[in-house]
Image (tube, rainbow, N blue to C red; front, side):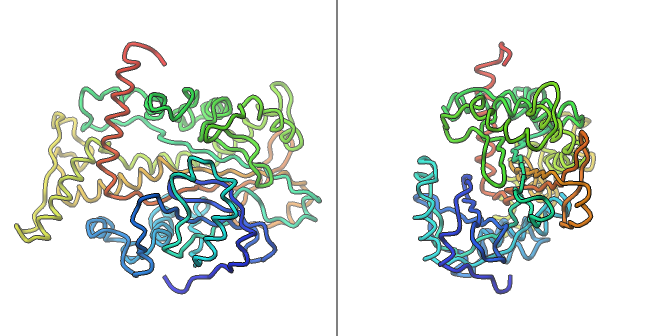
Length: 459
């Protein structure tokens, strides 16, 4: 991977908490170092009770031997000695060709010292939600982080856009945007072919106490391929954002409903309206609707959702078929490793009628090589189903547009105004092979919860 840039421990006080997920914390830079201005830092968390032995320190591969067989066509993934290196390579070499260079930022690998991370842990502790603090802290073992452009802002000279920047940014978690059609789906689980995964998962989350109410949002609207469907999805997200929608103004969050926050979407809507009034012309329906229409129009014309859905649909077996492919794949690797038998193609039988099983070469059996490809495609799809999209807009005067050149940025005219805009994918982490049994169990739990609660009722 070459020599990494090192972050100075004295800069730790200039990195501020932006947010976090299950595996990573994201920090934004607020100092004067020109090399770091406009950057965010993504650091891996150490899950409490997990093995803290560093792959990076030992220079041993992160991927297991089975995963090295799975990703054999990408040797730089196999050589990765830390999670940050692995994800960086995965985004650059696997996902960027699928989702296009314009919308994918692999970032830059950087080295972080233990002292730097210790200082960060102290500085951001008061900003982190209590339940996130309980689940994990920043890792001090690998010493590797990922430096990425801050896609919630534009690095435009102030003299071209006025004294104050006015960037409004939408961060979304689109989730699963299609209904599966796999012939490997069992008859008792056929509900998956007619009800969105997101909608069914909401029922399980309610039963487990993870959410307070059912979201109005449906990913099938967002991925409908129509501007009207996208607008409906956005309007529903604004009513029930959960952790699927956040709005930023000049890099600061101004709208969202996260981690049990007591602020309701209705309360947050007032300051949001005041911000939008300064940016988006509006008539009937008010400023928020005008902004939603602007975002829907941009998402529609960008075709970014079509690109994402295409990658999501690499999951052509569904988890019910993929878990069988996983078992065959793991068994084949085990037998070939121990030398108990020659390396021969395994096959995967489907419970469906042969004429229905047309997804792989028109046959009802999968060879070992087809199992390997199907598993890889499933994991790539799983990344696409769980990633985020960040869309940033900034109004610009027509006479100054020719003076500004920013790679990956376009210009949109809408309702008589001009906007710089950019759209990027977020959270494109590689999904690990060992999680297949967990995905399979979650799928079972989701369908069971939905069937038990709403088999005879509409939601």
